[in-house]
Length: 406
Image: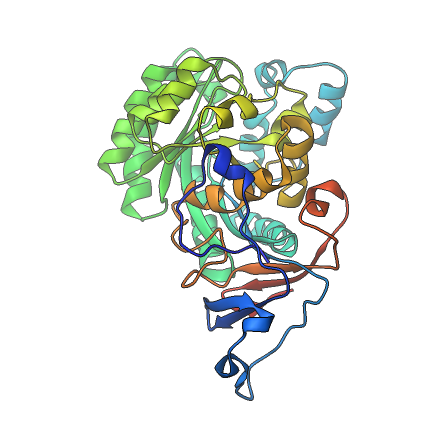
């Protein structure tokens, strides 16, 4: 069983290779909280005094993990984009597909035509899928609306999912995900729309926890991002930034300037970016599913950890560049493609992603007083087996808020 004797908000540098665990352990959940754990040989009699409604789960030969926390997704969307997948196979780049009206603009067109109920039902199925794969908290972004009405529609769907689903959800407003076709050559006008119309409307209905901007080559500039973040902060929206996926964009530095909770993607990270992050409270977040699916350059994760940085790993679940929210598979990609140790990958998909959602005081590890969000594996020989068996479903039981949901 993976445990924490004290509540830590994040894990950085060399400490990421360390996992606290107990063999032959007991774990006590009371209502929706973790209230005790330890070695079986040291269990006290009062722990065994059960009420008639109490339930015992025998996890002999199995392992107990804190639920995965997925701090970057776009899982509210309309329709898939497998045709673009074929374009990628034929050699077209992400930027080339976008210039042809594909990519985000393709998803925006479909989402604008979809009803809220359709979006809700589709997203609900995706959330049920990731719950079964061990995820206990997820961040969901807007950004496929690209006009005020459709952005608000997406965020209302996310709000409804928050109310209905057992896992914890945070909503991020990403109106600045791409420049709509009708604003081609008028990018500053679209930024004005985001600032003057979208952000006030989002705040008026309390629809978002965070604000995001795709600050990268071919999308929004540092100057655009600066303006949007300043406006969002005035309405109480803390930043989370898409940064440096396609080039050295300045997105990391602008994120740090505005105390972003996280900067995400980070395929292009050099000494300047590392220095900026070391002096900050911003969580560097890697999205290995997107880099894998698009055949992109891999972020220099080992260099970042050796410099003392924390690393979070999220799925980027979306229809175009990472059509999977399977966090166990993201762990495997982290180990295979980024040379992370299994222990590092576990910390990166639990406690550090909880930090990147502003939730590490209550999620991301098995610690006294934290929320009872855990999963129990099938019988496996070791922690290392989780990322090693990359295509196997190893999750047997899922518990969220102290209730068995799978």
